[in-house]
Length: 259
Image (tube, rainbow, N blue to C red):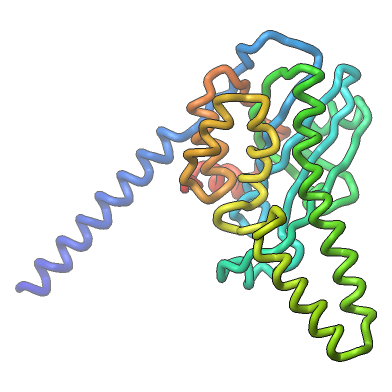
């Protein structure tokens, strides 16, 4: 009888937790809305691909100039494999930057289909938070990417030396330096739980938006979709838009990701 009673309590407890989880999922949903900011010619887009990165999601940033031409920034791990990253290892990341003309930028916003050479720059994206920015803001955001590009270049130079070195002693020294470079003492590094594609996308844009800076400094969610929805609910002045049509899987992932 005791065992039967325990099973009943577990069953009811599980049902209550599931209902609570679904209620949070419904609460976290975003509805389409226009931005409340005054138009200024330049635009900022914080964009998420719900089924990117094996279903965990992937975030990118896009800035658009007064001509309507877009520049996309996508950050991802480079030094470590996915398994090593999941185990908590940090490493130098790759900052992919792609440019589009006005026609291609508009097509991307209409369809969600991105076709640019670069890591995660050829894919289908689903939702965007957006707001107008100034020309100065536009340049500030692009400047934030420089340390990541410099770290990537330093890694590439040292990696080439390691790959080409035939002397065992020097090769081991280069390998040690590569390992130290990925620890993040002096350079920005990729950490899948605390400094992933989504964190970096928000960091790049934080200097031009106080709400985004405040959220980034206090965010606790780990997945791109979870952070995207949490910030979207907080930042009422940002617009929310769909990029094209979402598949059933994309809709489900976007709905369920709250952490």
